[in-house]
Image (cartoon, rainbow, N blue to C red):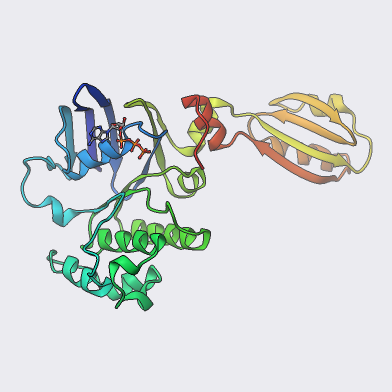
Length: 302
Ligand SMILES: Nc1ncnc2c1ncn2[C@@H]1O[C@H](COP(=O)(O)OP(=O)(O)OP(=O)(O)O)[C@@H](O)[C@H]1O
């Protein structure tokens, strides 16, 4: 079931076209990521989904509701984490959670959320006294306190340390397992690969590609390279004859076999039949990072 539908979205700021015909759909329970260079139009796109910006063209529907001019139901369905969450300086963490929970008909237990986000010892701390990472975690908690059916997360782990980042990924997966549909903007390839079912790469306000992380990689290059040191001499012609193998090269004491498909299984079973052990075996393949660079022509920022 389609939960978010963005069709030919256009958004201009004066003469500048920030989003230029972006289309994608997100299914129920899916984690859909938007990747792209700085200024690509990612935040503008999700702000149109959240109803924070008015599109100049195209349409957006969330649970069939137009975020602009729709019924007042959307705030009860959609939880948004803003890129820079600004709260009054003196508001304490517990007060902010209490306040935001009061906006919703069926709020989550905010103390549990705060605990999951490791902020329990900050409940009485004022917003201005929180570190950047703690503010970030609070913004995630505020996005989720309404028990939304759809969560929009914009650079949710930027500024978090590696442990907090991994904890936040676990939290996102837990929320998804509860049936929440997630639309997220990210700059981190590892995050995109770990969390997202599908990704849209946006560049210059346009969609460059939409696919699963593995699908994006395969578009660029689906070859794998297996590097190993054979325990006994190998007839390279036998390896070259394995279906899918495109090259067998020697590199020092190692052999490097390049090919497509289930190369590792085919290779190891061929070697096993010859009673040869593949020592120091390593599989190399194109990463999402490589695919991103190939599709946008730009380096990743992470
Ligand atoms: N309120 C605004 N007024 C004018 N121009 C804007 C405004 N907000 C964004 N822009 C411009 O629109 C373009 C897209 O911005 P947007 O914030 O959507 O990109 P982004 O992909 O989210 O970038 P980043 O990764 O840097 O957050 C940029 O060129 C930006 O400078």
